[in-house]
Length: 211
Image (cartoon, rainbow, N blue to C red):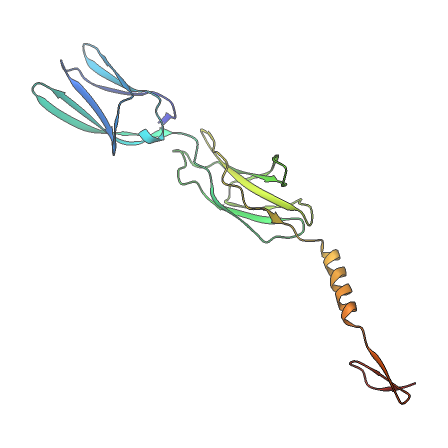
């Protein structure tokens, strides 16, 4: 198991006048040094990265012919960012945030996710929670206010870059305010037009009454 930017050492039996070639799937690795001793040769790949993860073909050539072998190399690193954050169940003081796990876990299981919030137009991000699940009920928000959210993924080797922030979402007004506005709206609709006719008052929606 190797971490990103470590050195990859490959030992092989020493052959005189040998030519080494390393290739990984679709490209040839040129970032290596060779060291030859009496009993073996060591190839060192410098600045290993995730691109070097996978089967590596070691090809050896000399005047008498060539041979090759496939070696399995795993480069461990921080995970990729989480994906596709979605905000749902928007209340006056909370929202439910969910997301997809990283495509690449860096060779180690995800230990936790870290959730942050932002209040536009500020560029300051505030940590609000950590969880092992790919969703979280974010509480403690202010009513009738805009928020953005983002998520990090942690593994044994470190923390990922943040996912793409969500679009701004606005929390609802407090329930008491919503009921008050609804009541005021109903009162506005309960107005009447009064007409006088031969000593009777005629009002919309009601029967005629004598006055």
